[in-house]
Amino acid sequence: MTTNRSSSPSLPSLPEPTTPAGRAGLAALLGAPGRAVVALDFDGTLAPIVDRPDQARADVRAVLALSRLTPHLAATVIVTGRPAAVAVEYGRFRGVAGLERLVVLGHYGLERWDAATGRVSAPEPPAGVAEVRLALPGLLQALDVWHTTWIEDKGSALAVHTRRAPDPQAALDLLRAPLAELAKRHDLVVEPGRYVLELRPEGMDKGRALTTFLAEHRAESVLFAGDDLGDLAAFSAVEALRGSGSVAGLTVCSGSAEVHALAERADLVVPGPEGVADLLTALADAVER
Image 1 (cartoon, rainbow, N blue to C red):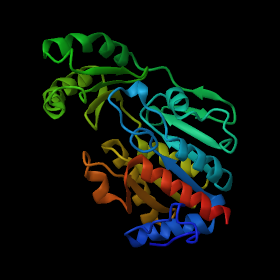
Image 2 (image 1 turned 60 degrees about the vertical axis):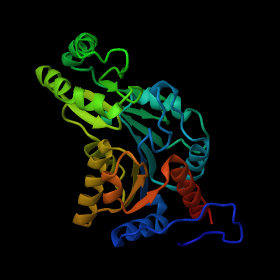
Image 3 (image 1 turned 60 degrees about the horizontal axis):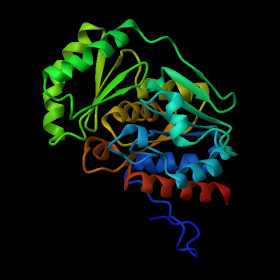
């Protein structure tokens, strides 16, 4: 472990990635933070996972750390499946000093909120989303899971959560094929997650959104942190960029016993949103020295 300010044991220490590529990515970020981007998922990374999606809120310590860290970076970006405006509200990012260069990419990059303008830009959702919105309640009733599941309407996408079902995994497995068929009929795709299946437009994922954002800012290094299957595309993007030699990168898994795929791919695993907050605090300490 590499520690900062070791004379102050109450401060989080900066952990060492377990892979050479991850260590190189961290070194590049610390060596030239002004050419680095910190990219973060929202749910399960900045905010703890909760039974009701509308009750999720970002860890206050993480937001404080980002407000210290972001002025030293090329940019900070939140890449989430949520609508951008919802992530801004639940993250309590609006008007925070130090977050003037924060960007939120919602709906996997289909929407964008810039702190500099305070506005959201987004295309009109395809007709298939409205059609699925009408069909979903009847489908869930026919499968006898209407009272034990939760539909989250994201505007440009719809998510069915099973976390509150008596057996969340069994409910998820029951829904996979019917929701895949429903999505296919309306030219949508299904994105699986932690006890959730999201029906959304095809053509954008977190990897594409992150790659485009890094090119926009001419970033030389990136840290991406996520917790769920939807974040694998961003991990792949970081791996591809550093494989080409164009960008140094560090992938971080916000650890969970529910999802192992990210931990197996990550350069660094931290213990959930609290661990992410500790990591961001340690990075802020390091760049402020």
